[in-house]
Length: 70
Image 1 (cartoon, rainbow, N blue to C red):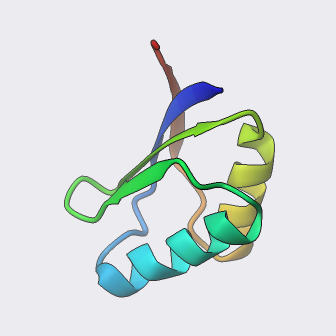
Image 2: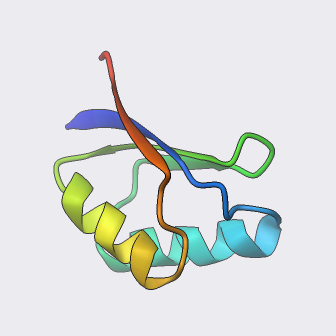
């Protein structure tokens, strides 16, 4: 698994956090954290393209994606 940090400027509240969490779980992602304050999703995945696509489908397209060191 690779660790990523996604900056998602559309995150504003706990409702946003719940929508993103549900979307990630819907595609099988389990190892993630969402920070409303920082507007960041941090996760470990082998499917970053699928994650980015899913977030875009629910209108939370990441502005940046950074691969983090293990």
